[in-house]
Image (cartoon, rainbow, N blue to C red; front, side, top):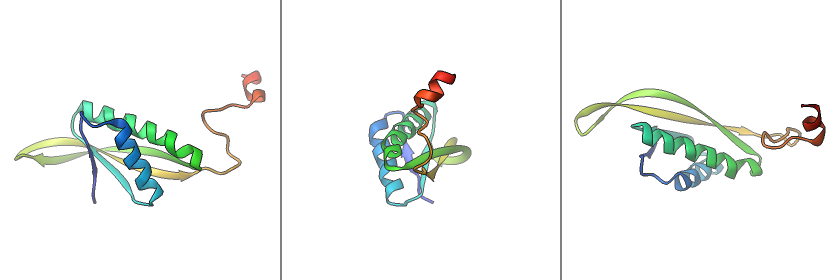
Length: 106
């Protein structure tokens, strides 16, 4: 399984573009991060990618797992993030908007 490797110096917008492109191409998206900064950039990228994809009728969600990996002969703990793709039905309301009726009843 190939991983999109994200570091603390990765650009969230660039990673988001890669995620959105992979989703559109039907390629499974799995991300690997080592360290808090890398996880931060990866999560920001996923949020940005959602913004790219939702208008096209596609949404994504993610699930993290821990994995022991070796980097330069050292054992490290990575966080791997699996990205899941969901088709949005035309009947479903966007999570970002509420109808006037829904707002007035809140």
